[in-house]
Image 1 (cartoon, one colour):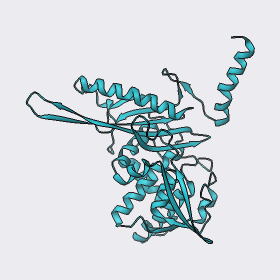
Image 2 (image 1 turned 45 degrees about the vertical axis):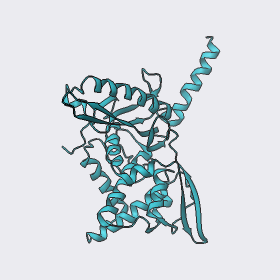
Image 3 (image 1 turned 90 degrees about the horizontal axis):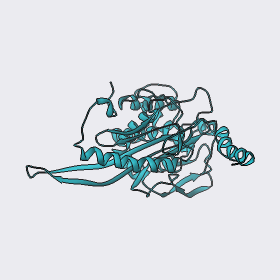
Image 4 (image 1 turned 180 degrees about the vertical axis):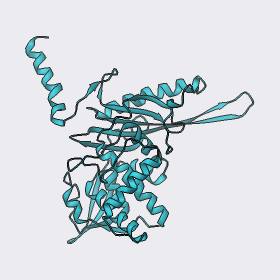
Length: 325
């Protein structure tokens, strides 16, 4: 390669990283990624890992926790997700894309706000969910305060209760350009993903490729078609979970994939059923979709090898703890 071609190649490789504000390292598998984890959903066996406890920004992967606080609240209070919420004034301060053209005062159902936040990664919808639920939590406890801050307290409590040790959410949407940025890590996002995918309502929402939502505006009801930002959905048995990207976080992605359970006959004639579902989290990956698929395929290979070897356990650190310690 002559000098001119080398310089051109370096420009194409380096400048995108500079513009994103992210420093990448080359993984031995050929893709560039900051940190990642591949874990068996059921046993919590870690199959592949790199810097899984490194504190970084995770952008809209934050909305996994946001959605779970909302869904847990709805279950605990028997609230109908068809009830409407109002877009608060605070949403106008977030910035970022506003695909639905939302303005303070607009109304939409809690369910449609969840779809907007998870599929379309809408920050306004996430803020509205936090304000609505946070206000209800304050009222039920007879307290005063900022509804969004109250909601974020519950997000952090949810993370801690699922074993997270390197996570601090500061908002419900994951934007990191105002004030002290929030942070998490690959292992903690995986913990939240495992918790979330155990809930049928969450796993159903994030598995949808698109959804029509309704917004009640001053001029009347408008309908929008939201498309899932997860381009891996439906490929290699992938059925979730969430994308995220900011200039500080870089491209991020959490995916889940499920295969048909293995059924084996044991020596005593009984049958053993081994469920198969993997969670992959990639943070700061230049090509998050290709990186996650590559890690997923290798993860299945390691999972099958572990099974064939009798699911041996040599060290408890081989497993991801999802219990508060």
